[in-house]
Length: 198
Image (tube, rainbow, N blue to C red; front, side, top):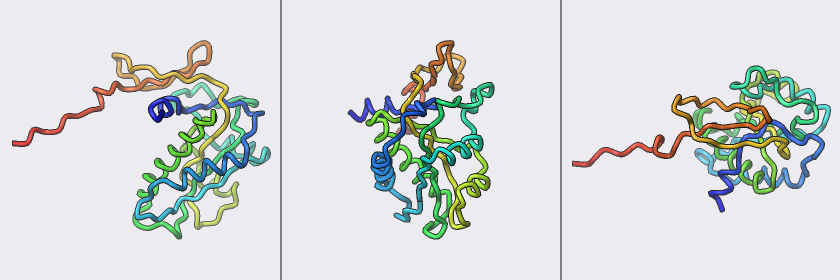
């Protein structure tokens, strides 16, 4: 069950924009993010759900969509995400170095995305943006630092995994039918044997 869910939980960048997300479901997904482990149990991550059409339109051009596809400007109107979750660090609650929050962020967003995939919803973690500009748009005070923007929605594209070729190229790509291909390293390539104890 978890094996299948992890394999299905892919990054999606084109969505059925007209198919809105239910606010109750989004709250349930954010609850999954909340329940994960947290460094020093600080629980310093906060989340802002952006579902309003006007605010989504203002946020969209501030985001970078696919670094390996420079010719692709991102999803067209009608394929844009119907919701965003803006992930924030509450600096008042933060304990220890800010870098610890990034561990929490990975755990939280993966939990959220696994729960979303179980419901047929997929997302894209976006770290390419100007935090200061997004912070101004969302009228956040200095207590909060924008760490990540998570786009969410029902998919309007197919994503397939494939083994990395002999050239070692890790770049994802679109084929002529718009299918999104994601190369993955083989399991034996990522396993490193421990030293022998003498």
